[in-house]
Length: 300
Image (tube, rainbow, N blue to C red; front, side):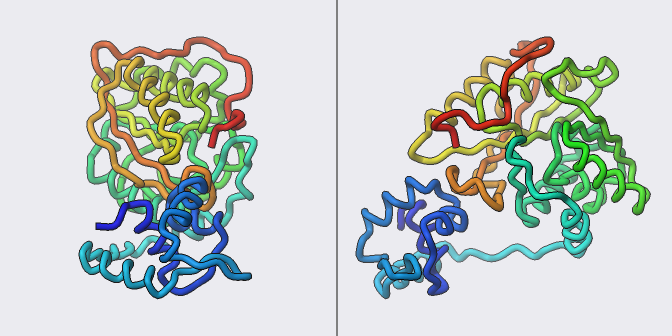
């Protein structure tokens, strides 16, 4: 079978378009460095033109063989997608100073269906940052329970509050900067926390630590993070945070999140589902200072 990274790039170019390297990275879900490496490794499959890079006849034939072997079947979208997209359309342009990169609609659907199917929302569900409006998708998917959203971005909370008011949803919004200790009223309150934290490991550790403080002793953490195949050590750093915080990994949903941007990590990240243990503890306590949302040098 075709190497996974090469298959994704072939698939991104499979409709005959010519794309730039950044565009290929976003559509293929591979880091830009991986794209450059594969274009050089499989020269017969790709050709360069003034418009960009496209598949050769040889490349299209390789893609066709692999698609037949994999027999991929596209998933059907639920009927509430248009409502979600209407709500999401009210958001401002992503704030890069907060590491905001919005997920695709299909990703919001996958998140909502997974959370509702798991039943974790029934014991209290907290969204630690929600610029992707996953809480709205959860309500549209039929959660029927109150959810809580904590975010430092007042614009995000305003959009969610407006959507909740118009549709009679129960969404509690909390404006708070996680650099400050969490309010006592939120400690140990939630059966599950969902978060897509900042890229930098310092921000990741802070968000995981605050989530642990908010969860019940048998709570679950859903945390998203991604990294390029050519920078796997960055994923290892975040795995270490989870282990040192005393969380056990229950499941990893690979490439679960797809972003409209974040090409350095292939516009993809995996969703990790972890559970609390008797050894779970926050690695970061009290107030903290310094940048958390700005990518560090050489960080994706």
